[in-house]
Structure formats: structure tokens, C-alpha cells
Length: 118
Image (cartoon, rainbow, N blue to C red; front, side, top):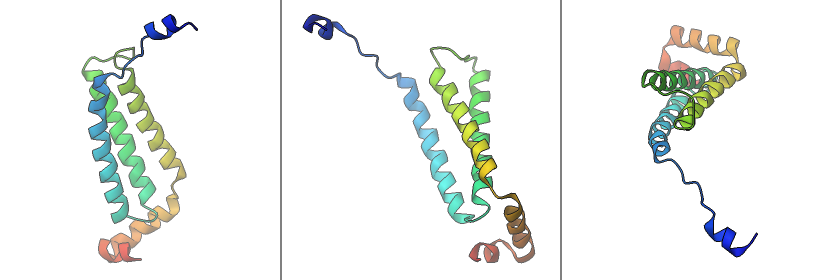
């Protein structure tokens, strides 16, 4: 490659609209970590699954209602929504259902505070 060709190449810059997706993702991540600490143990993955699925579906619904379609302009936002849903399904598949149900029964029988200490 010649020196002239190297100087005239243009570098594709990041879309500034993608930075707007960063704050909600950070808030959702912080809320997820806080809730996972409160409900540590067998309820952490089902909770994470519900949060990620909800965030993904809400993001996709907001994009759809706003008139955004998958294309060059809003491709990153749709990818984020799809990734959230994918990660939510992955967390649901990795969770231990019988153990989570047993934990819920313990919480109902003894109260949330005593079940969280076990």
C-alpha cells in the first residue's frame, strides 16, 4: 500500500447514538448485581434470567414502537436487545429449577430474612 493510499483512507467512527445505550445497561447491571447479592444462591440465575429477558423484550418493543427497523441505522440497538434475550435464555437454561423451588418454599415457610441467611 502506498503512503498516499494510507493517508486517504477513512476510518469509520462510532455512532454517537450507541453511547445512549450504555447508561441503561450499566444501571441494569448494577441492579442485577445488587439483587443477586440479596438473593444469592439458587435464586440468582432465575432472577438474572427474568431481568435479562425483560430488559431485552422491553428494548426490542421500544425500538419497534419507535419505528426502528433492523438496518444500518439502528443495528447496534437491535443487537443489544437480541443479546439481552439470548443471555436471559442462557441463564434460564443454567439455573437449577428444583433447588430454586425449594428455596422459594423455605422463604415462604420461614420468611425471606431467615432463608437468605442459610
